[in-house]
Image (cartoon, helix red, strand yellow):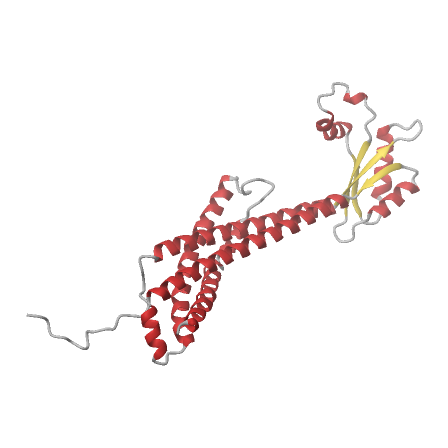
Length: 297
């Protein structure tokens, strides 16, 4: 004997189910894209910090190459140059480097030269500049010329420009990669929306003919895929955070390499990922569903 029908226990099937068999593949693809986006964001942040650190170090220092004149010894010329620069406004400290340090700086370029001490190696003066009001190269040259010191001032301006240019290139590349990943995620969601709409075409046509607004139907797809993308974004962000933490620990607290320091605060870059993934999916699903529904006869 069949069970009697109970209207209170009957619930209509939802237009869009909570879960489908295809959701697993969609979550996997979006999670991978979010994982790559988070790694890109952390890499750009670390690179920007490294560039700022290098620029700050170079901005606060200058190097003076001293050449002796006449019968003056190189060490005496370097000491005279350091004395002239030490009293210059905007200079915190000026000290002549020992000959051994100068030899160590040029040895990698000359190779294994046994009689390197016999070469006419110029003496170097390391200048530490005032952080608030640093002296520029022109002021340092004037101070040296006033003491009749033959020297060349290197304020590292060329290196600073190169570092800043490289930092800008990294930011542009990172932004481009991030936008490409967002576009790929939007394309995946649009494809899933198209497939879901095609599977329910008959129901959509009935609702459309019954007077349901296009926006109301499209918002159903928008809400569903935004929820799926947020879930995938949470998975991808969590995986990226674990990889970033592993890289920092494996690098002895300094990241993967000393040239690319990764701080614990960089892991916070993954926090917006689920929200951004949901926003991209919502826009892609809304636009795709609205366009397809309007195209129905």
